[in-house]
Length: 483
Image (cartoon, rainbow, N blue to C red; front, side):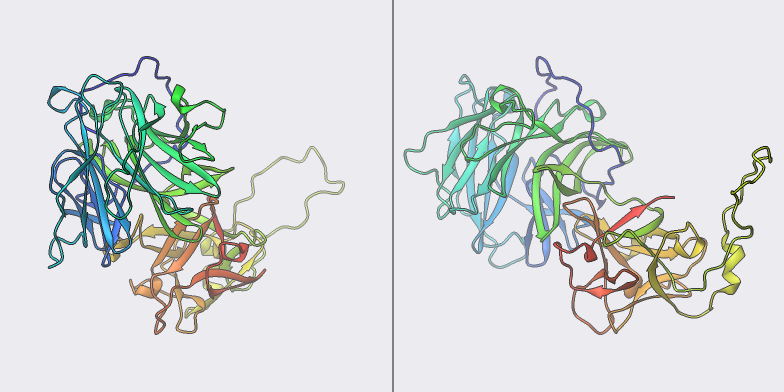
């Protein structure tokens, strides 16, 4: 939300669980207090404080253009049936100098401002605060309970309690006679989600609206009941300031706030937020999208994939993806068994690309999976291809043998090979998604002549191919290890 710089009484400095650099989306992803990202007719939308929002055709490049009337602050959006429900806060949060806030809801058939069906309904008030009570009606978050279809809205800031009310999923109005319930304190910008029998309450903790000096971070508690109590991993109640860290500052961005969850498929989830300051983009507030992981029943932000040179290791057995070439022995033999212990110790150079590349075929080379020996035919350099666009949460990558332009590619037979030179062809572009268990899914952007999404899988201990992704099978999962 937008308000003056604030500091809670006893905010401890919390250790960052995610230390890698967080790469902001490209284009002009400038936004504050973004809503959960919603997909509509093949495009992605998020709305922020003010009346506007961002649009993306691929989930990676974002530009302004989203339209949301009513102004105010910190909206949320949720698709229910074939309509979109938007909630936002008017006044409150210190906007205009007071805490007399209102939460409003409105509907639209589409989020596309160019559609003939684009028209918001008249906004209705579903919660309010009078400026003196122990709550500030701002920062709404929506949850449609998948277990019973009931609709809930959380709201509030540091100025008092976080509260929960029930809405009618057909009208967006507050359920008649419903009384607000206090569920947390010492946070703001809350939202909720459901997973495996637990309700999770995500809240933004720390200070905002101070650019690179903002200390925003996102914390979580969980409950077996939607109405709470919400306890963190140490058993602390969020009504008493508890909360387990989900994401804090890292790399060149700080102040993550306003959590949103996106489930893209079995085992593939993303989280959205804003970062109060991206130091590489004039310390502006930017949209962030990260993998969402689940560890011991708790959500935590994953890492955006970093360019580099890696062993690509199959989760199936721990073997490595490699070129199908003859193994070239290094000079020397066994060193041990009664050798003179006083013999001078000398480092032995690793096998180099120049030692073997002339022995490799010059055309296409198949790939296989084998024991990792830190040899040149097992080292893959992975680099983003900016001109190729991207997907929700990441760019496309090229995967080449280190020191060469020999590129991994998908074939029309749904197999994988390497071609002598990377050309930018779509079958040479790869999507890399961190899965909810921390491993990775690797998928070609296109399989020639096949309109189907397949992933790199280990069909056997030594056989890579392309096949249906199965989150329950280690055959579909990979790890990247820098050596």
